[in-house]
Length: 513
Image (cartoon, rainbow, N blue to C red; front, side, top):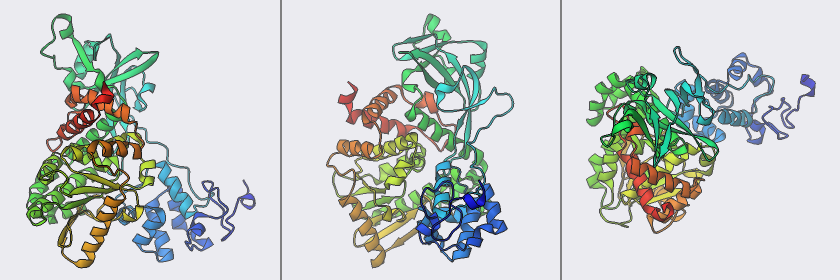
């Protein structure tokens, strides 16, 4: 289209982005003052062409004088994310978020490059790379692409897909072959996927390849020569979410094992300087930083727990499945929950979340399932949970509050650096924390007297089918999860996941009959 025919902003006159259906550019709609010539700057044009939002962010702020906090409000994200983007420590890869930024900032159509394609990867020795939905995978060897999150990097899982010989009871049986035997001896994480036509549709069931090499003690005769896959391991949003999180955390921690071996003992002694140094040298991946920051915060709180009274209120910053999955799979967090659980029911303590509606809408189903299970895990320890949807509390620091007396600040989720650790008795800060906790308790979207009702309301708010989720948790609770997603790293575990699944199944047992 000729430049004279392009739609233009009714306020500033610049060509409108093809992503904007309004009469004014996003910048003018939000009162952002950008001179028309700003977009013609060579640095800006190069950044737009590459969809380099970190550079765009920095240049817009230099041009307007906006602070990182003000810019973060403009684009509906955290100041810490803006900081990491500008320093090149984070890149936005989600196409929906890229489009959101394009509309907000008013990217001119003729300057923005093509949107980055979805990530696809292949490697030598494998037939091809595939990405869920699994029902598009043909039989044979593949690489299953598990996409990157905000901190978890993209992970490739080798898969071998075979037709199941039989489906008896609650198991699929696959006949063994030299190829299958070779797969079960792979030292790295890989999946064996059994396919079966059920009720006119092909369904897929996965098992950890190494587990497939084990012969169950109750196998006799011909059964001992078959690989058995529990029907509970059908690939859907629940099992996919589990595999996505475990594989992503595993890859990060195993890749950083040498550095973690050096810095984790220092974290236990509250010495974060070597960790910060490793961060500056980029020796730790974002996934490992989640573990280090979480451990440092947990240790800091536990050391001060005796001074926080019998019924403190906790404020947690997790609002996505990726962030909340740390409760399910980081072994130290399960111990932390046990040690901070209330001494008696309904003592006034609890844990508050801020999960705005836009965070729910933009989250894929498998992440919302993980978020639900993390909340269920807390409820299983008698920890009352509250969820506020008010986005004005989204940037509140993580804290533990003894009302009107003192608070411990311990933030690692979306924190600058490793974590933010402090304690305070300043009246202004205590009032801010009390206001946040009081608002969450008084206006929780999941308010109810019983854990069962709170979990039902949580599932409803997260847009999850509770009947399906309760049934699947019951199935996984019966089968266990080790044969599906056994972690390779010693710092990860499945006890939290198993506990959450059992608790959900127990709370909604009548729906599973």
